Image 1 (cartoon, rainbow, N blue to C red):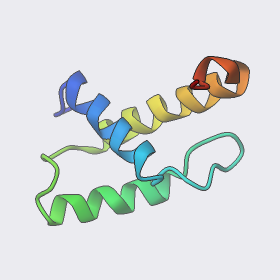
Image 2 (cartoon, rainbow, N blue to C red; image 1 turned 90 degrees about the vertical axis):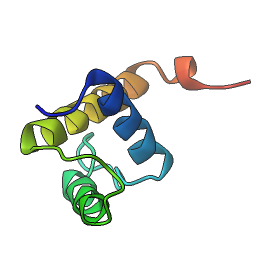
Image 3 (cartoon, rainbow, N blue to C red; image 1 turned 135 degrees about the vertical axis):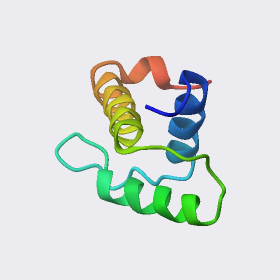
Image 4 (cartoon, rainbow, N blue to C red; image 1 turned 45 degrees about the horizontal axis):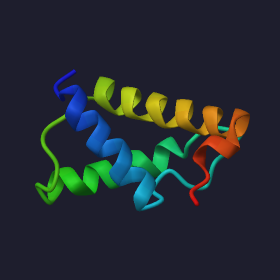
Length: 79
């Protein structure tokens, strides 16, 4: 892995806010869409260099959030 935990968190939040993880398929994020957006970000030099292990870890973190939301949706409600 090339990214720090802090950068992983920033990437996860950016992906979720911009809905790059959608559509959710079989309870998991759309990894292909995320990888496509990361490639674009790399070419545009918007994100630092990362490797496949970083991408896998980011997708795993997003999948954990999706799973947790399915189990505890009230914890994610605002208001």
